[in-house]
Figure 1 (cartoon, protein in one colour):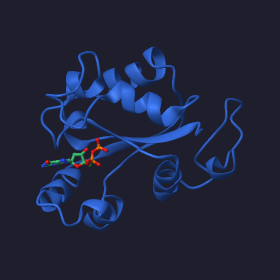
Figure 2 (figure 1 turned 180 degrees about the vertical axis):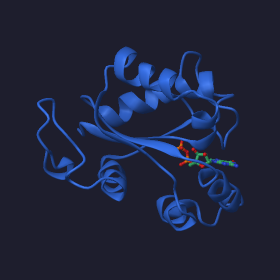
Figure 3 (figure 1 turned 180 degrees about the horizontal axis):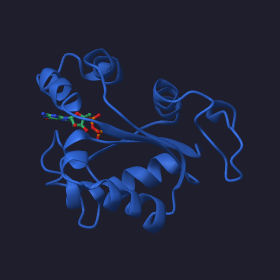
Figure 4 (figure 1 turned 30 degrees about the vertical axis):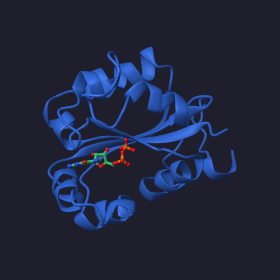
Length: 151
Ligand code: GDP
């Protein structure tokens, strides 16, 4: 069971000033500890690598354009059973299908601009965290640096 997951608050949610509300849902209401966090702009190359499983999909170009359209907030979240718990909190990929009260239902605009990303497996969570964060950017509760791949 993996204690860590990666989230991305996507460009339109940042642009529409939903960062505060989303972090409130994650950190306060959802009980996830934020172990690392930063605002960055993704390059086209980074998006293509991050979403490479979708490279043959018809929406790949559109997704790349969207994810590079403005800054995102990336964060490492910690909780018991983090991946499953976070997928529950964000809801289904398409906000129309997400349960009420989920982040995507509340702040998602459409299937592409669905407010947030959440890792889907322990292997991907570790890979995705290491994609965005170095070991000097992730902390335990006391502020000591942690390596998520060995915890
Ligand atoms: P997730 O794990 O719930 O984020 O869903 P996926 O791994 O299937 O898709 C990755 C991301 O691609 C989603 O979060 C959306 O931003 C985007 N996406 C998925 N399906 C579609 C689609 O049918 N059309 C468009 N435009 N974007 C999509």
